[in-house]
Each structure stands twice: as structure tokens, then as C-alpha cells.
Image (cartoon, rainbow, N blue to C red; front, top):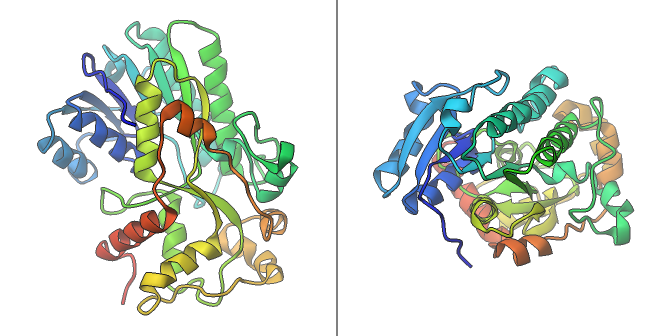
Length: 352
């Protein structure tokens, strides 16, 4: 089910050079919308080349605005005249040295910066926040402890902290800040998208999403001796973009939306890729024993508690609200993974 995009006023996309943002912008431009793209450095031609290419082949137009998540008022100019704001800008990485500086501050203060701009901009009617299922749970054990063993939009992450899976903590704090600001006013409404691990092809040469790091480890031999049976959900980036569009332009859209196609494990991602690419790439075929994962966890940037609580525990994410309220129809995981792997081969992720 498609959603009609209102092109009568500009639309702001923060973090416009990001993995998910690129596909959102494509849908907007294809519909003829005027996109205000907030980026760190509009003069960096390499960073915005893929967006320029999208605009060249679409009826919509794109204009770039310099922005900074940690600078108050940074989004005021970009937001002027916009009825809809997509706030996608937030770090997604396991490569950090200071979780407060590198994860928490950009996520939480960035959300505050953008939404306070929305409060100052009379044209804004809807804000769509890219949150994550990380704001719902930390590990599979959280899922097992949820009501009925199923994670829904009613569940909030209570296990993450600055010292335990700080990325999940940053997403939880950022989304809570967004709801706090939204509920203190009545002019604009907030709708939240909570994707699981986003997979599928990118637009720019080297997307910065952590999902590419995970799939690279599957294909470059890092996990050739075995992959962990750590449970996770996955979803195609194009379906996440479609969910954002519906959240923005469906008048009755409201609340949080788990956006996830399938419940799986890291090992199953590797086994799925083996069917097509196993003859050429050292993809895993067996599970890595739990005791080895617990020992090795700190060397791959994971907390031993995450491994011990997550391996072998099934995960059930309920995506029924995104299907019914936003009309999302999900692509099969196999299709998304194969297209992502093909994209990564073309971009030279795997040296032969």
C-alpha cells in the first residue's frame, strides 16, 4: 500500500547522507518533493554525490544546509517552511572510545536540538524520529522476559546503561527525550520508527551503518570458523524508508512502530548467504560455541554479558502495528541480504 506524499511544502531530512536517509530522500524526490537536506558539510562533494544523482533523475529538488547536532539553532534555517521533519541523524557504531561523548551526547542532545527547532518553526506539523528496537530491548534475554515472550511497542529498554551496551542506552534516552519534548506541546505530532538491524543495498560507496560491519565480518573470513547464534531482527532499508514516509504523511499515524521483517540469528545470516556465495567467500557454516564467544566478546567490541544473555535465546519482535498502521509489506530476508552482499562486492568490501 503506497502513501501519498504531500509536496506542497518542503521536507527536512536530518542526517541526509545516512544509509536510511538516502532511501527516504529517494522516495521524496521521486514524488516531486522539495527536500531540505541537513548535513555536516555541504561542501563535501563526495558525501552528497549520490543525493545529487538522485535529484538529477527525479522531479523533486534538493537543497543542502550545514547542521550540527550539538549546536542549538543549527537546524532553524533548514527547517524554515517545512511541514514534515525526518530526524534520522544519530550514530550507529560499535567503534567508540567514550560512550558519553560518542554515542549519548549526539543522540540525546541532537534530538533535543532538532525538536527545539521544531518548537520554534510554526510550519512544522509532523516529526518522524528514527529510533531503534534498541530502545525496546538490549539482548534476547530481555525478549524472553517481555509479556508473553513477545516484544511490542509497549516495551521499553530497562537493561542498557552507560557501561552495558551504551548504543542501546543512547537510543532509549534519545527516544524518551523526543517523547518528553513532543508531549509538552500540541502543534506538531511525533511518530517513531523502531527498526531492527537494517540490511539491503546502499546508495553511497561506503555507508556508515554498523550492519555493513557485521555482514563484512560474515564474508571476509572473520567468522569462517563459526558465527554466534545471537538472535536479532532484520529489515530491508527500503522498507524502513517506506515506513518513514507512511509515518510522515498518514494523518492517523501515531506512536512507536517496530519495523522488522524477520527474527533470525547472525549464524543464520551467514548460512543464508552461503547458499549463493559460499563457493567464493568464507562464510560461516557452524555455530561458534558459547564459551568461545564469551571469551572473545571484548575483542570484537561486545560485552560478555550480552553474549551470555543472548546466545541460543530466541527473539520475537511483533511487527503487526507497522503492517496495519503504516501498510508496510516486508521483503524476504534472503532477498535483502543477497542484494546487500552484491552491493558490498561491487564496492570492494571483500578483497580477493
